[in-house]
Image (tube, rainbow, N blue to C red; front, side, top):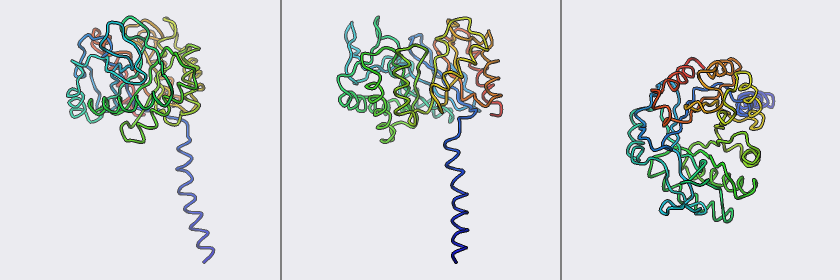
Length: 306
C-alpha cells in the first residue's frame, strides 16, 4: 500500500509540477495586436480599422483622465475620472457593436496621457486611499457603461513620487481585477528617467498584475535603426523582466523605427527569437489617412503561425 501511495504521489507531483513551471516561463510569441483610438477627435470609428480574425485585437480608448471636463482650464480631481476621447464616434453602443461583430475584439480604456486641454495631465493624488477609492468608483462606472474589458496606464507627468504611484495604480488594478470589472491591464512607459522611475516602481511591487507592457518605442529618436530597435527592446525587456513587452510604432512616422525603415524586419527578427509578444500602434486617428496599411501588415505578421 505504501509503495502505491508513493507512486500516486509521484504521479501527482509530475502532473502538477510542469504546470507551475510554465507559469514562470518567459513570455513567448503572441498574436496580440493593440491600437490606440480616439484621442485626436478626427472622427475615426472602430469600423474604419481593418480587423484580422486570426489575431487577438484590442482597441484602446484614449483617454480617461482624473481631471474635470467642464471648465476652460481643467484641474485634477483626485481619481474621479472623466472620458476625454471622441465619445460621439466611439460610444458605448459602438463598443458593443464592434465586439459583437468581431469575437476576437476587446476594448480597453487608457488612463492619463500626455495632456489635457493645453496643459500636461498630471498624476496628482491627494492620498493613496482617497485616490484609489475615487478611481475604483469612477472607473467601474465608465468601464461598465462602455462595455470595456481592461485598462491601460499612460500617465506621463507626475506630482507624486514613484512609490505613491505604484501603490495607487497597483491597488486600483488589483481591486478592479478582484471585482471582475477588468480582465487585463497594461502600462505604457517610455524612455525618460522620471517616467521609468515611476513605472519600474509599479512593476517591482505589482508586476504580476500587469499583463502587457506597451512600451513607447516610438518615443526614441526618429531614424532609429533595426539593430537599435532590437537593442532598445532587449533593454526594456530586462527593465520589465518577465513582462510581455510589445513592439510599437507611431503611424505619423514622427519617431522610433518606422514601418518604412524596417519595423517589420525587426518584428520578424524578434519573432524568430520567440520574443514578439505583440504589436501596438499609436494611433488609429493618424493611420486613417494612410488607409491603415501598416495595421494590415502588422496583423498579417502576427497571424502567421506563432
